[in-house]
Image 1 (cartoon, one colour):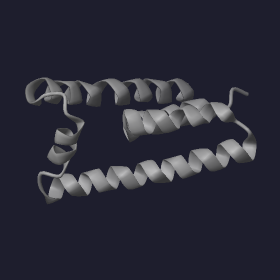
Image 2 (tube, rainbow, N blue to C red):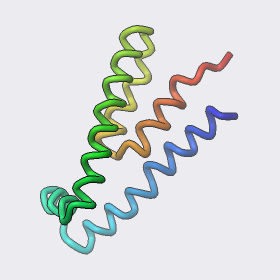
Image 3 (tube, rainbow, N blue to C red):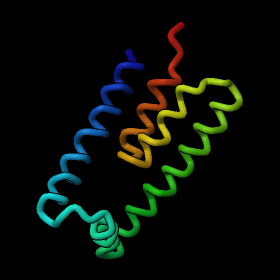
Image 4 (tube, rainbow, N blue to C red):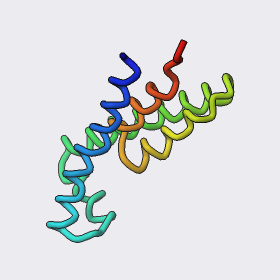
Amino acid sequence: MMRWAFLALAVWGAVHPMWYFVTWFQANGWSLMAMVEAWHANAATSGLVWDLTIAAVALTLWVIWESVTYRRWAGLLAIPATFCIGVSCGLPLYLFLRWRRD
């Protein structure tokens, strides 16, 4: 049951934030650098960007360490999900992938 909850959270974590990104791109043009600039519009948004960046790096180190240690290579899929979509997708995806089906 918990495994499927993580998968549902990964899907939600991919779709919901992406809706905001696409909406922003449609309104402001399809410039990634403009979006990065918008992320640093003020101290509050910069703090959130750094919070998520540090969480993404920590998750990446954990995924790499566990994948190499336990030779569970599927977990590596969480890394591009984290950096291309976000931690809101990458973390629950990794938890879904590492959950053992005993």
